[in-house]
Length: 135
Length: 381
Image (tube, rainbow over all chains, first blue to last red; front, top):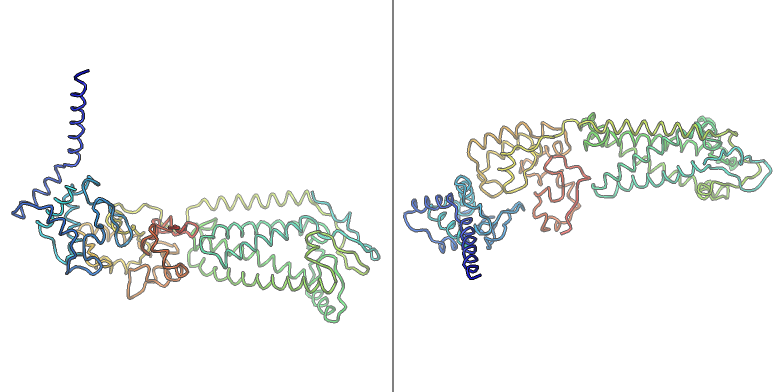
């Protein structure tokens, strides 16, 4: 009877580890590492949050900010201007996010041009992913 | 059970009293025709497009009734049989002339003018059934003639179908006016007679020749006629429709073009519009939707092979008339605006719709490129 709590703790620890494992993803880590290396400085979730929520100039008039389509709550689904649902951006709500480098680059390429009228820097991309991976 | 009216209806020239004039089949036919034609007219002229199935089935029932009446016109009894009341033009003119002189005979059955009306109504109804079938097949690519009739033919016949429908309305008006006129002239409610089946026998009545109805034979003929027509039409309806998209969307196209909006079937734009759209993906409806070159070329090949020119559907034909100022904006075409003009703007703002370009919110078959009107259901919220 005395060793039951020990077993329970062990099971709990394994379960927690499994959860953490589901969120961490080697492909995402590699993408982040690549951006961090190219940026030449540590990535920042706070900067990513500010960038995501900021209203930018220079982009197309209908899309001044990331939140136009993704909404201010990255854990919730967004909506395109054509009315189609966008899966949540936060990794905690959508574990597949930021695991396909080509997909990530395609959409940063399009959406940075739409919102800012230019490519995003590697630091900006890395900051946003860092924030969205730790929500 | 049909009772041959020759037994009960033997109007004596001197007798006064109720005499059976309209047999049960004639009466049932008449009022069923009123119901089916009324439904077909209402759904054809007034209701929204998604009533198409009711319209088509009302028309089919009407055609079946006309078939039954035609058989009964050759095998029914007195007052039902065509030979007893359909006359030549000379007799019709003589009847009208006598009416003008105020000395027309009273007919127990149909008078010569009424007979003309019956022939005209049956002919126009048959014409409506045939043209309706062809329009349904050619324009909506549905029903027994979907495999046969090209869109252009169906579209032209649609005008004929409409002209016949307005002709039918005119005939119905004349029929009602004639019924009122004759009811007043002969001091007898003819509409009620068509319900009860009896009229008052009076001296000097003109009666159709006595003839024995053949209900059993008529029943067999009707069953054979309707059975053969039904089976034939059903078999024809199983054939694949003429030049209609059937393949699923190309997966690369569906994935790339369906990322932000529904993946529109490529047949909704003509090739010329596709060229302009693909050349301007860097600013696609206010957003950058550019594609890697290899993907772009794969999509170009697919949409060019499946553009509006490649199919015979109504959307492919109608949306091919692009708005030159906005060549690939479906909602900017005159066709789109005409067929959606009745909808309040609020419909497109409902949560389940979101935007005018979200076709599949209301058109269940939008992705197929068919847009059959019976597949419309507008979300309530």
